[in-house]
Amino acid sequence: MRAMKSKVQFRMRIYRDDSIAIGPGKVALLEAVAETGSISAAARQLGMSYRRAWLLIDETNRAMVHPAVNTAAGGAHGGGTALTPLGQELITRYRAVENAARVAAAADLAALNRLIAP
Image (cartoon, rainbow, N blue to C red; front, side, top):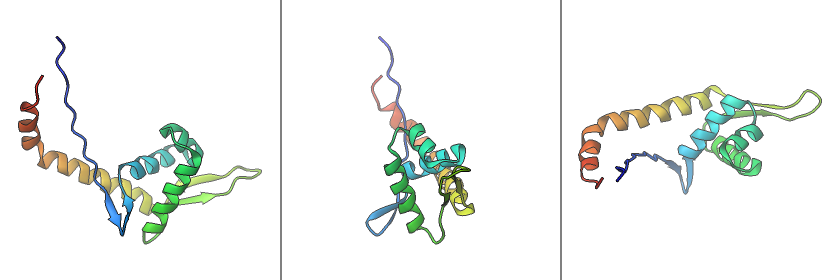
C-alpha cells in the first residue's frame, strides 16, 4: 500500500470592505503578468478567461493606494502590461508573509501531520 502525502497550504486574504484586496489568486495573476507582460497570456497561463483576469486586475488596482498594474492598449505596435513598483511590492510582501507563517508554524504543522493517517 502506498503512503499518502499531506500538503499544507496557506491561503491568506486581505479584505477591503467585502472584497478581497489581495489574496493567493491575485498574487498568482500578478506574478503571471510580470512573467508574460500580458493580461491575456497571464490568463492563459492560469487557465482563466481574459475577462476574469482583467476584472481581478481592475479590482486590485482599485483597492490599492496606487495601481499595481499598468496597461497599454494594443495597436500597430501591440499593447503591453507591466507591474508597477507597488505591484512588485505586493508580490514580495505577500510571499514573505507566507514564508514567515510557514516557518513560525513549522513545529505545529509537523505535529499535525503526525496525526494524519498514512
